[in-house]
Amino acid sequence: MTKTHFFYALTLPDETKEFLKQTSERIETEFPFKKWLHHEDYHITLAFLGDATEEMRQKSLEFVNIALEDVSRFDLQLNGIGTFGNVETPRILFAGVNPSEQLFNLQKKVYTMCEEVGFTLDKKPFKPHITLARKFSGNAFQLNRMQELADISNRTHRFQGATVTLYQTHLGQAPSYQSIATCSLT
Image 1 (cartoon, rainbow, N blue to C red):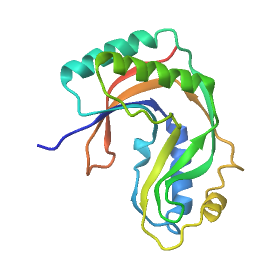
Image 2 (cartoon, rainbow, N blue to C red):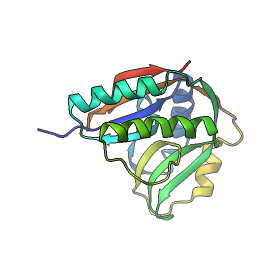
Image 3 (cartoon, rainbow, N blue to C red):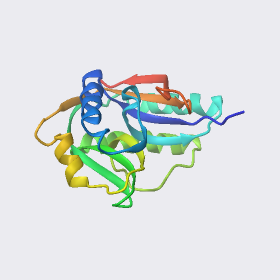
Image 4 (spheres, one colour):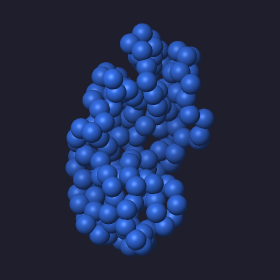
């Protein structure tokens, strides 16, 4: 049986997914990555749970819903394209978001509730981003050229953080992430 994974994420509005889909289409022919994410899979990860029993998932949903009862919706803005990993052969291509105290507070609440339930979570600092592609497979990656083609800096895109979703992964499918439960912010 294939293991599945679960994670909490800030859900992106459809307009933002479409904007990022168009951005990816501008650059994907010139920049080969092994996997370009389906636009329905775009999100901002708040807590990666890994494999989880039904009991732990339900308990985490209960805790997260209580923690987010008084959290208001907030505005975010995309701020360009970046990468994680080796500069010449990046592991992840992402769209960034401007720093937001509300986003960091939301992530901290979700993360803390998941830890209280008993999940062992990644200790790396939270770096909000929206993964667009994985594993560069070309010869000469040029971030400046990619940023120029993507042109996010000149095409301001704002959106509202309004929903937190618990997703389940389905590897090999497109889209790969299934919404299990959502929590709407006030």
